[in-house]
Image 1 (tube, rainbow, N blue to C red):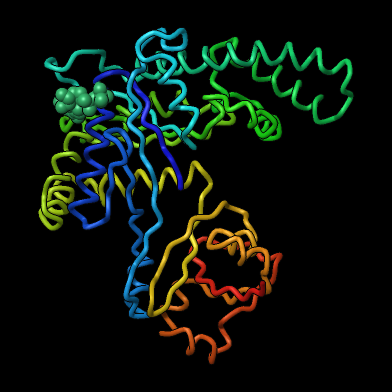
Image 2 (cartoon, protein in one colour):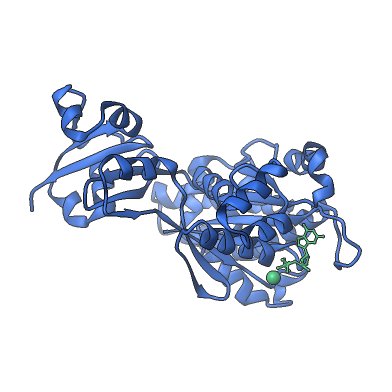
Length: 362
Ligand SMILES: Nc1nc2c(ncn2[C@@H]2O[C@H](COP(=O)(O)OP(=O)(O)O)[C@@H](O)[C@H]2O)c(=O)[nH]1
Ligand SMILES: [Mg+2]
């Protein structure tokens, strides 16, 4: 399961965003469960899955799921234990990706700054300082270890830690530093906070919808440097939270009236999948149609392993067709008759939207 954590200053709109997701999930009849008040699991909306289920008359539809964590407690000084300090940092370490919630909406009744760049600066400074503290300790220890251990792996790790130290000392988080992908991978075992993929939810007011590009421009520019891996999603969180309370058709009417597209869940999940490098494949039949999440670049056996480790261990081959081709052809057997079912082996790189059937032997 993919976990995304909401991080931002008090009153930025994190809890409202959380409510918008939960409400929408309920209104749209997608199962939404609240694990604890701050953790929500949401079914990933996927139109392709619904159409496959219709095609094969599936008794059941199983969506992929994503988890959202409303991480409270970021205030200046959090890296030194201010506010909920340490607990806050521990929560961030546990997520796969971070969604910064930055406030741009103006409302004198809601305390706090409304300059998203001010929010961003505070938030990034805390995370970068926390990372700086952990890297400082580690780089010294690993440098000493190099006297005994001459392995290339350790040398690479020390290089990576040095690069991280240089960036963090300047207050630059790793996700928008120029640190190479190889070095970022070498830093993975240290669970640094800013070595995670990041997206930004820019919380705008209704009155800012008309000039959303202008409001978003400075935030986009802040992430525009080399090595940037962030997406900026302007979102009218309060409006989305209100829409989430409505019945599905009324909800869509409201979203359409404000030109808000498919709403918060879809946009957020799609962005999260992009920044996390996740893809979807499907299985479909009369019993169930199901969406499975896999790592971009994964080959057929690894994808089989997403379903069951036995499928991966005993992998023989996969029958494969892209979802839209299957819909065009009308059924699995028609696809086979037309010679359109591909037989793929263990080196096949699965593509987003593939429909697969695995042959295995255990
Ligand atoms: N005017 C306005 N108020 C908002 C908006 N988004 C959130 N708020 C309000 O700001 C306050 C803080 O929001 P909340 O989601 O609790 O922020 P959190 O501290 O980040 O969890 C609440 O009173 C919200 O109703 C918005 O887009 N416009
Ligand atoms: Mg809150």
